[in-house]
Length: 419
Image 1 (cartoon, rainbow, N blue to C red):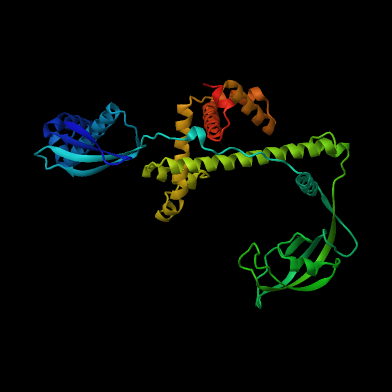
Image 2 (cartoon, rainbow, N blue to C red):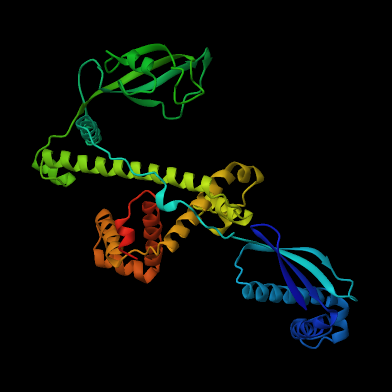
């Protein structure tokens, strides 16, 4: 038997295989012996069926399995000898077997093409400096205060900033009466609704009032079904509630984990600074990746694209029965994003390998400490869990790729320390 490898394309290798009929004899007899031990036919106990009967009933299946075994063995040995690592399943083409002359066939396998990324050490893209302004801190402070606020009943007319609680009695949209939800209650924070006209109609209302509110939905309403349409709401007001922010006393500060208001504002500023810095870095990294992809074109195996799309669609599947195969429409829709993600991964792998980037134990411990702080668990317990579960290697890989990403936007110290 023989096998010859041909480079069909950058991502496809074709194995042209020839198997003499004589080479099938030993594998066929081996399969026949296995069948003889396992088969039980009417009138014969298992293992006692005559060979002639087995050949008559199962001969073609035995031959097919024997050929499959030989082909698989040849493919594996040939690919291993040529140091070719296939991605996806092999595809058999042009199979010829007249049971007299040599068996011939072609087997196609997909591979990752070799790449040589140029220009990654100086992409010309760096991370711009960022700054946090006082108004941003104030906005975040106000948002936090609103989140911790409570609403309390007030015996007065509703005004902007109040919560109005009521029931829908009738709703008409563009002259068509709508079916009311089973729960007819609504709660509207006046001044914050996506329908300003509805809020305006509730201004000045009190508990017990019945009101007819007429307005037009804005053209940019979040629900496209209502954009620009006229509305008539008949409602009954049940309660008016005032938003009461928390008091920044010692008890509240202890509850949210700060010393005082100054410490809270400082924490908010640091958090905003980290968010803006990360956002700027991620934007720069993506720009650098896109530049490298454009400057270093290479193909991506179809199997890689299919597998990534399938993983994306099924990453939240609870069990094997929930797993679905991508449709042709989904493949067409998601291929562009999948190709970019695969190219990004290969480029960063190339950079990490070329620059001998490897995270130090100190860097791994630093990331674990951050995770321990975030989840409020002991550092050593978390570290032991990662080691025992094998996730420590996954964490190292994530850090390695992050360091490679930093490298292409000029952040070098961490990478250079590992050489």
